[in-house]
Amino acid sequence: MSIVIPTHNRDETTLLRAINSCIKQTLKPFEIVVVDDVCNKRVKEFVESIEFDNIKYLENKEQGASASRNLGAKNAKGNYIAFLDDDDIWLPEKLELQVNQVVSEQAKAVFAQMFVEYEDLGIKYITKSKNVPDPLKQICTENYIGGTISSLIEKQLFLELGGFDRAFSAREEYDLWIRIIASGSKISVVERPLTVAYRSFIRDRVSSNISSYENAIDLLNKKHKQLALDVLDESERKRRESKQYSFLAAQAISINKGCVASKYYFKSFLKSFSPKFMILSILSLFSPKFLIMLRSKM
Image 1 (tube, helix red, strand yellow):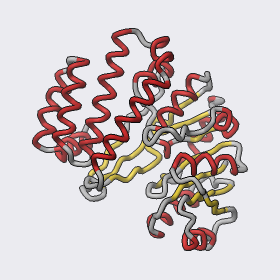
Image 2: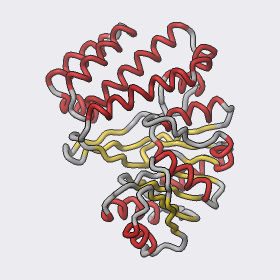
Image 3: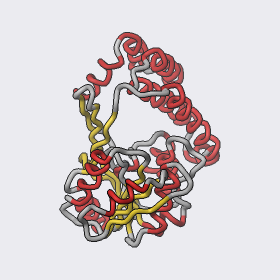
């Protein structure tokens, strides 16, 4: 199998942390492909200096993580592709447990739960990805699978589906998961955390971050409109809208924008009339940090 790591102006210490988590896997990968969309000579020399039997550096002339992942997958030699971001890590058994599930369940794609860790807050929680009875209905309702770094995907399937859609500035992984499941491909989830996604409570250009998620949801709704109509009934479509608003609220919470989060939680309440979202809307105004701490305890 091949590991693809897109990188963009990442400091060497953080990039090395990601690469080392691949090298230390209990099931060794065939190769590690680092794709640099800045084409930095320093990064090239650094990657090529790492002691691993088969690590290679690729230049991506078209900026963006999706383009880098697609280029890496296209040039990969393995039958399965796993993706890791340059500022995150895998736990040592990630590949071994996922490959076991590929074999035992004849799966084309295997995912896993994740640790989400706020390094500046000292807070960590586990995502709740799980196997469900009706994956197509569930994925049309929400991204119950999780992030790109949790995935292991058959290369042939990835290429047949066109990889990540570069039209998305965010949520490109959700779009791909929808297409994988809609294709009828067998998927599975390892119901334990096998990756660590690092987050920061303070980010720059917050408004553009939130707007990119808003635009991505609009694009998802347009691209998969007919699929949602075919798979979901009216009440399920309302639940889908509620989930979309609560997702936007959660993104705002994660970057300390309580007022923005409150607005989206209230919109989620109007779609679902769930008291939970009204409570979250109110709490968002007082302490976004508290909501992150609360999630870590649940």
